[in-house]
Length: 177
Image (cartoon, rainbow, N blue to C red; front, side):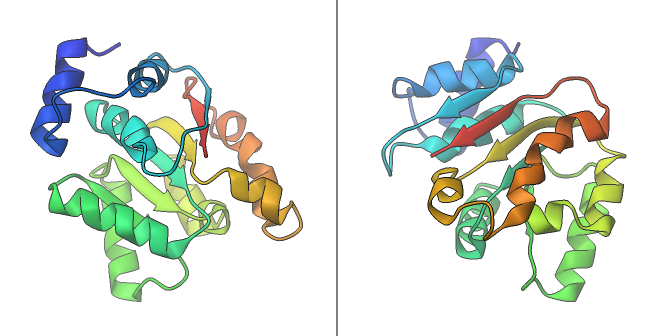
């Protein structure tokens, strides 16, 4: 696991915060220790920070499965403003940008990749994921699975296959809501 000083230093450097709020520290420790987690926190409590910070402190890629393109775009724009290696892939992405993101994925230049479950399982993305080291699978806005049900976005039901299908050393799976 990362030295906790590195966590605090990155928190200050990239987000400008002096300290984490409980239970952010527990969530970050769990992910750095490669433990699965279910995180239920109020809106505006810093859930994204709980998976973004560990992703940036590790080598490899953290996948963030999100149901909303606007949310993906907002989070990636915020990470870009902080000069952090993140991208998103979705159906409305400009083809030239999509190619750049896929090249960055191939070149291991990303720490966070936001995408919907359909994009995750698309052949171009799935093939590349087999060549990169993953350090986490995050399901953001996990409550939508309950609200929308399995019939609306059936690829969500396949997320449990990611870890065994990629055959990599264990990486944590965490659901945030």
